[in-house]
Image 1 (cartoon, one colour):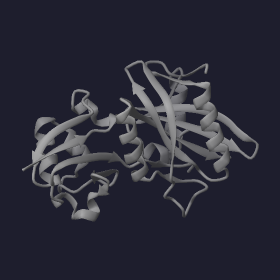
Image 2 (cartoon, rainbow over the protein chains, first blue to last red; image 1 turned 45 degrees about the vertical axis):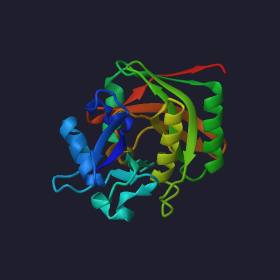
Image 3 (cartoon, rainbow over the protein chains, first blue to last red; image 1 turned 90 degrees about the horizontal axis):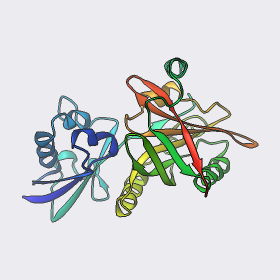
Image 4 (cartoon, rainbow over the protein chains, first blue to last red; image 1 turned 90 degrees about the vertical axis):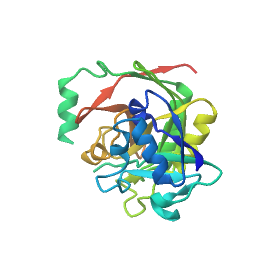
Length: 94
Length: 157
């Protein structure tokens, strides 16, 4: 088990009582997110779909790498990991 | 855009929403970046602090627009720029409090595309930009299924 810090973006802090980061333990990114979801009801539904896949309007980073490039939620945690939930930001004139 | 427009008509600007506060120098920085990017859409993040009655913008960052296929009317902010801006902000005890982007040759009102991608809890500043420069700046927040306009207060410096 590795320790991981999960960085919570401002729009999801209503689920964490205002906390900007949550400390968890796990062996993969997916496990760490599960721990987050068990502690903070409702947050995981905003990040993962019903099949447990990362939603299209969210990016998950492990350190400075998009987890999609690291094997997705199975990406292993090593050392002191930082997981960031990064909102996808888009829009435009039309 | 009809939902955003309808919402705007039903509510006085900013009622019940936090007020966005920033300095004249932050506004000048935004205007400079917005004008420089014209006629392309330019986007970035607003860094500051958020309370129930105030969105304070201490500084702004510019981010890469990944929609290189439609630079004139769409933006997708590079998540790696978000990651870096967020890390810098946290180091300073601040947060990402919103997003800014430009509407080249269009009003500073959210489009349907803006609405579909919006996150509740962020402020969305839109700058209308024309050839002659910035023609308007307004800020919006998601409130239920709509955007509502947020009051802006500018302080010196």
